[in-house]
Length: 282
Image (cartoon, rainbow, N blue to C red; front, side):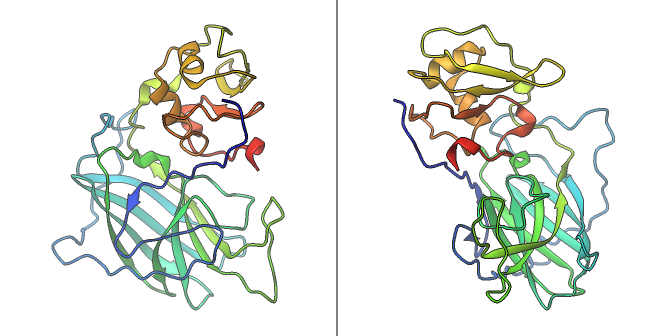
């Protein structure tokens, strides 16, 4: 059925004392550091193999450092480095070291998409912990075995917006939480469904008559929904299962639903999974 729908923000982390961000203010959520038995001694380095360590579908990464990154800010006043370490079985920690900021306190968020030009952190994120200047924090969290960790794109440091000095998002909405520093999550593990990296278009057919967009190398990247399109037929056009098309579009589709809008954009690029807001839904 073709119609207008509300985009789904897929949030899969289960964090102790977790608070999800939305369109309302995000109070800082303090998460205690793990017990001594869970506190990692970070000595490993990211994989130096030619490609990322392959993660099997529906299995969490094995033990080791699985992501690294560094926080940067426009004014250079909020900095630090971070690592994500897996302990197997969905257990992990986010460790932030060398944290420096001119703000008295700030919240750490994990973002589903990069926000290089958007000052707001009001959706698609999770509150991890409150940080203070010169603080080092080890934040423990659990993940569902079926969660693809590489869905998360960056670590953001945010503060509550100042009502006296409002800041607006790219869409013109007033921010409730403002990003003061960000850092890309550089994963050393593969996406769970790595075989979706290069899809082939078999051409339009009943239920899949939409246009296809390609990048400069000729790889399909985006599908534009047409009238009477349905998810199973769209997936079949690219030689994948419906569940795999839904996997590529965690923020744009509802599993099992054919609630699509004419002109809606479906992502076909594995590396952009969940990383682009759909302008047809804003």
